[in-house]
Length: 195
Image (cartoon, rainbow, N blue to C red; front, side, top):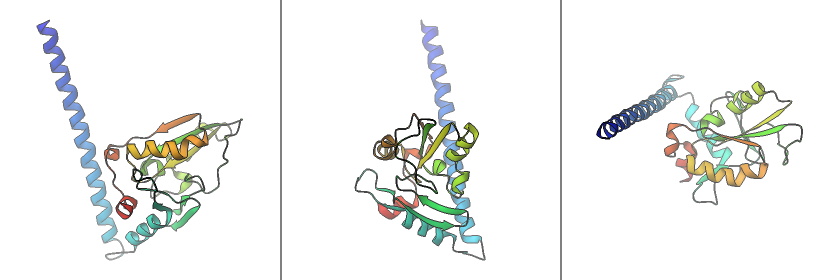
C-alpha cells in the first residue's frame, strides 16, 4: 500500500511537470509570436506601413460592444472591411463568411459549427483559407456544411455564451471547440477597444 501511494505520488508529480512544461512552452510561444507581430508592424515599410491602423480599423468595423457584459464585444452582423488578404467580416448571423448562411441546415448536408478565437476565425487569412472552410473542403462540401463562428480574442467563457446566443440557433449537428492556451484570458484588439 505504501509502494502504491509512492508510485501514485511519483506519477502525479511527473504529470504535473509535463503539464507545467507544456503550459510554459505555449505561453512563451505566444509571447514570441506577439513580439514578432509588434516588431513586424513597426519595421515594415520603413517604420510603419499602416498595418496597425488597418488592423485597428478592421476591429472597429467588424466588432461592436455587446449588450451582454460578459461577452464585452461581438461580431457586427453583415459587415466587412477589405484587408491585404481579402475581405474580413461577418455575415448576418455572426459567421465569418462571404455569403449569407441559411437559417436552417440543409437536410442533405451535415452542419458543423467551429467555435473558438482567432485560430478558428483564422486571422490574417482569407475567409476561404480559414480552418473551418478548409475542413469543409477536406470533408466534402456536398455532404458537409462547416460554419466559422470564431471570434478573435474570445476566451472559453465567452465562447460558451457565443455558442448559446449565435451557434445553437443555427442547429449544427456537430460543434467543434478549438482551444488555445490563451483561451484562459481575453487578449485582443476588440477587447481593448470595448472593455
